Structure formats: structure tokens, C-alpha cells
Length: 154
Image (cartoon, rainbow, N blue to C red; front, side, top):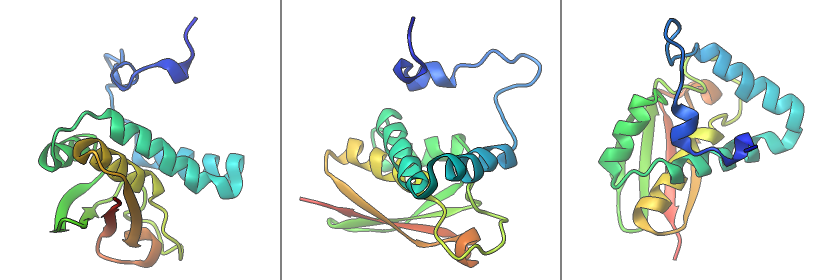
């Protein structure tokens, strides 16, 4: 018998819900991510969310940044745009962020999962290690978008 941990992303995305479909309310996602993770893992919940995002980002199979943007928007992570791109870093902005858009200001950066997906996918695309830092947050601090600065390591 296989473990859920052994399933591929393709297997996890495959659903059989003819009347309910593939979508779930954003609020349910947030309860699992922000409440259940926090209660179960405490201070480790942010790292767990980031690490889960990295695994998913690496497994998406995006071949370039434009394909990644399309995938993230199809998954409804948010509306994605590249604000800056150099040899050393890329700055990604997320509008309508799934984790925090519409939340009251909570005073911290809450989008570790999204940062992980972006960093993991870019590592896979560019074959370079990344360091991701969230610098703006809609729900964290009332910014107009969430912003992730991805620095490429040598």
C-alpha cells in the first residue's frame, strides 16, 4: 500500500468530484494553512509551509518564468507579475494572494507557502539555488500586493 507522501503532484491534483468540482473555498484553505498548521506545528508552521511550497514548486515542471506564472494563476495562487529581473535576483508580485488578500493586517508576513512555490519552481527552471524573502504583504501589513524577492545563490 502506498503512502499519501508517495503520490505525485499529478495524482494529487486528479479528482473525482463530478458534482462538486475541483475548487474549494479560499477560507477553507486558509483555515488549514493558518490555523491547523499553526496549532499543530507552532513556530515550525512557517517553515513547514515554505518547505511544502518548495516541493510543489519543484514538481510543477514549469520550463520558464512565463509558464510558471500561467501555472500559478491557473492554480489561483494569485495574479502574478515580474516586477524586476536581473542576473542576481527576480522580484515577483502577487495580487489577490490566496493566503492573505482580504485579511485584516496581522503584522507579519504570512505567505510562506507562496514564497516556497516561487523559490522551488525558479530553482527547478534556472538550475540555481534561491533565497526567498517576502518584502510586502496584503494581509500582513496592508500593502497593495505581496512581493517576493528571490535572490540567486552561486
